Amino acid sequence: MDISLLKQVAATSNKIALSTAVNGEADVKIVNFVWYEEQPDTLFFSSVKTSAGIKVYDQDPDVAFITVPNDGTPGNPYLRAQHVHLTRSDKTMADLLPRYLETIPNYQQVWDAIGSTLVVFELKVTDLFVDAGLGQPKTTLTFK
Image: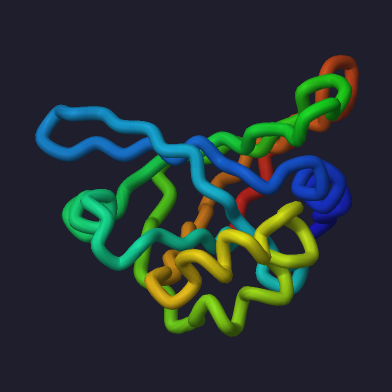
C-alpha cells in the first residue's frame, strides 16, 4: 500500500478533533496525537487518568476524528475517519514520549506538568480519507 500521501499529510498536524457520542450526546475534544509510519492504521493519544472523557471512551469505542492542520499550513490538508475503534493501549507515555517531543512543540512542558497522570489510547482506523489540501490529491486508504 502506498502511504506517501498519508505521510505527507500526517506531518502537517499534531492535533485531532476527536468526536464521541454516548446516549445521544455528542462531544468533541482537541487532543495531541502521534503516528508511526510502520503502524499506519493507528494514531495514539493520551488523556489524564481522572478525566471524565475516559468514561466516555470506555463506554462507546466507536469514534470519529479529523486532524487540525498546524498554524500556517497552506491548503488545509487533513486526515478524517469515521467508525474508528478506540481502545486503551499497551503502550505507555514513556514509550511514546520521544515521538511526542519530536512532533509537538513545547510538549516537554506538558510532560513535566502532567506526564505521570496520562494514560494512552489507540485509534484503529479501517478507512482513512487523506486530503493533501486545496487543489492537491485526495485518497481513501483501507486497512484490514
